[in-house]
Amino acid sequence: MDVGATAKISASGVKMLPGVAQWLRQKRRLRQEAAHTKKLLGVDQSMLFNYRVSMDHPLLQHGTPHADDLSAFAAVAGPTLVRAFANGWTEYPEDIEANLNEGMVLIGSPESEALTRLAFGYRKSPESGRVEYVGDVLDLPFRWQEDIEAVSAECHRFVPGKGLVRRPNWPIVDNTGFRPKQLFPTVSNDGLLTSDFLLITKVPNFLTSEAQQSGRSIVSIAGSHGVGTRAIGVVLRDQRILSELAEKIPAGSHAFQVLIEARSVVHDPSLGSRARGAVVREVRCFDRPDDAWARARRNVLRRYTDWASDVQAAQRANPIRIE
Picture 1 (cartoon, rainbow, N blue to C red):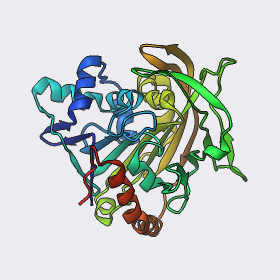
Picture 2: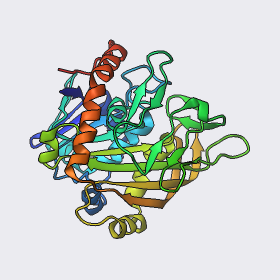
Picture 3: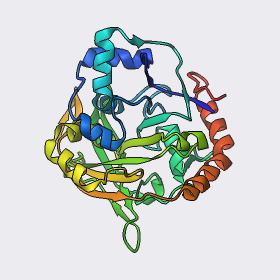
């Protein structure tokens, strides 16, 4: 099974979709900090990864990456991209194939990132087109709320190239207590976000037995909103946060979630809304035996055909390749 990717990091360099490369050249904000914590989080620059930036956002033309997700991609992949640009190791093909047997970094929530939906128990309803949680893959300590019926409040923020946008104030669902509870980002009296959540999830790549047996990982970086997603850049620049994560995530942990609260949000109509600070709200490790990951893989394979059909239908103009 192959799915298209935004960028593919290989031993010989970086393959990147032209639109993403153009954005990176314009912004010139690649970072080289925090290599040790990237290794802990599973995105060590010495490893080979497929990066997927969400391209199915309801406010954008399908196949167009979101500016907030691109900011997150630049923050995470920065050291590798710096070397690739400096040494001329970057290619710009029109299509990039990403094999599910490899390590993957998924940037964006299930609402807009198709493989995140498949891996973490979400689907797009064929009747309404809405994303819904079906919960038959993994029981996670935290998950994204995508049910519009459960959210009555709105929030506002600025998105580069789009201006002011209004969205449901999506919460994070906390399953760590006796009963689930919803954690909502805060908003000001005029509806602008004053905080947001970033959820970092690392699990073994259980999608194929070869990937799991080869020690590959899936790393998901996704906020309740784009402000949270792009706050991964704040996290990777904050030595206090990096030290706290190093203390709370045991060495060798294969599955964990980190819930970050992005704070001190500033709103700029041109540059977009972004957080200037962040704090760690929770770290949860949930390593599991091999048979639990095998069950999760069977659950994914049961839904794969429907997922692939949905993705292919949505991507006719700019198809994800599934072979």
